[in-house]
Length: 364
Image (cartoon, rainbow, N blue to C red; front, side):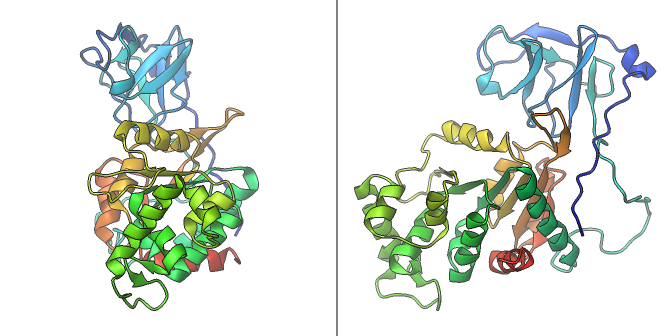
């Protein structure tokens, strides 16, 4: 089946509620990192603001931020990035009453869903059949590669514990299906440990047998990488030729590693300041057209909270952003929805099987 993006349905601004809507109210921020009272908090959906008689779309948004009018455009900013004097939109209605419109039903669908009072198996659990999801995802990845989309992968350390999973993800990188990788210190540490010593947390990545004194292995890897001063230099000097991070370096795919309070080391490239790391993540989310989170609930939720349901392309076209959460627990997918990432689709499986199915489906 050929993948086709659904068409964006722009609001009908000739409707009475738009024509008669008041102008959005703009009030200057009283100080840095602070919005005026009754500020409008943004969502994951397209939002329009009536200013000078025009309905302006916030082209680059994320949830739980404020809308600032500047230089004829709407800019969506985290509270920490609000500056004193910024003209912030205030008002907490969403259907034109305050010159604000939140556009929730904005993409055409060829499926007509009828509400039913009673139906079986509506949630996505380990009992859900995911074959159709795989088929759609595979066609989506092909479409993204062919049309210049931006596919961001969010990965937990479990992705590096298995030889085949590392090999399959490397194939995705080498064949252009990965535009950016978001992870923590652990994913990179154990992947590079695997490349150097054949283990992840001291366990053989092929046989799963523990190596003698293997609990030292990840620390040895961190220590050696820090001695070289960078991951690329470590790869060069140690003649590393396999793994997820190696493939990123080899193929110039950016990777963003964020630190946590429990990190060992960490590696030289790990962002130790939370908000510098968050800004770097968002620099990739701002371009993302598909996001796939694997085996990392909190990191995926963090990315999901920065990801809107839509993307405005360079030619002005509005398209959906697709978001997948892959985990062995059905709780993980529902957790993402509970945190506001309502468009996320869960696939309940382990990352080894998921990556095998995706690479096989892509013919890699």
